Length: 71
Image 1: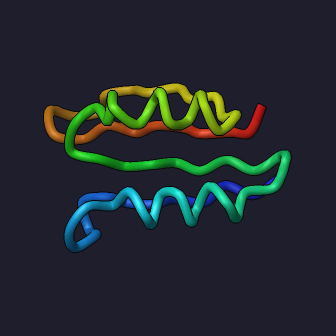
Image 2 (image 1 turned 90 degrees about the vertical axis):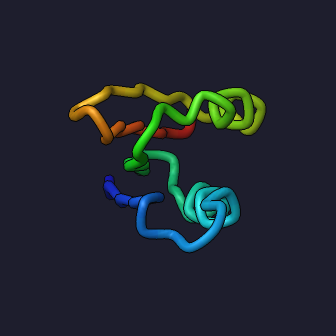
Image 3 (image 1 turned 135 degrees about the vertical axis):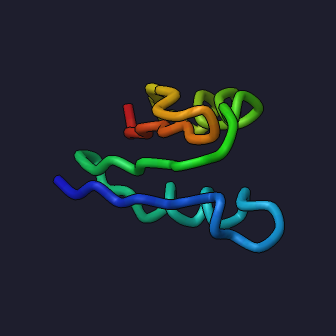
């Protein structure tokens, strides 16, 4: 089991491609932790369509952490 972190706040431009790439690298027991400055609600439908579960938590006024795992 591996946990990887992707901080979208550090990505130049839109982070969608980097998120999709990171999802493609996940094994069945791996977790991707996405860090963002806002709740990435539009991403949730994409995750659902691609077979991923997610759990989002706001940890600061400008920081959200979303744990993403394959179903």
